[in-house]
Length: 375
Image (cartoon, rainbow, N blue to C red; front, side, top):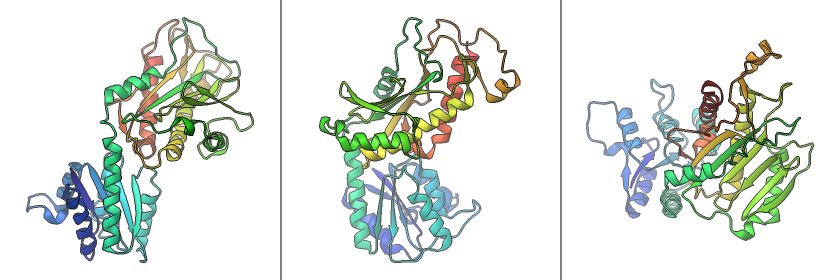
């Protein structure tokens, strides 16, 4: 396996050597700028090309930031931004030094990224070697649990979605049409044991996050209930209309009412985007709680509008322009609507937090095409 080592080179040679030694001792191939043969491309182009071939990136950060080139950021910073969301990144920060202002901002950016795989602090090359060895070992264990099967992952995401109820709608007046978000994670494995699913501490934590967390999904003015649904934990609110379910494999299902306008059949695109982004952000918090070592490395999201026969899809501007009139025939009565999925369907787990905005935008556009453009 190729592992890219990213750091400042000048003055950092002992630490780069320690990282290289850890990679080699575990039987892998280190990819390092100093090993590249002469070539017509610039050194940074060569580094980025080498990075794209790696399965894992080791980001080692000291006190110096490095020279900012034409991109406006240092080569190491550029390598990090190239990797994040695409290649797993294990970041290590040197302690006992005073980082330059630019480096301090870079370190803050990395440490604030919830998609990073592992983080560690070191002072000596020996400490860094040990941290790198552990990070690679844990990453291998997570990926050795079971190879990621994208088709199986997509099938699980779709299987969680509700089945059409032969034209019947359980739409609740005053609560808005429900947006259903299914997230299937892989490689498939048990993340929560039966005893952990029923753990009061987990239930309390998820309940608090759902009501009062920075990515809350429920109305804090209303109470919640919890129950077991098969082997999964379910949190509900409002007679079960608003729901969240997490399974032992880490798969999640959200059933969340959209903000309702004056006409029940109107769905406002901005409300869909806000609700979907909230579900994604909450999923990040749940993953941090149930899988902090990141055994789950990929996900497939699937989204649909549930329990509704007819939808008039509009932007807020369209609704404001003609709030009391809208064309009929959009959405179609009794027509089955396929859920919205991405292409490719599977995304790295890091994209759930780092590339969340693009994921939400693409899913909303796809859902709009399904419910509006193809009505």
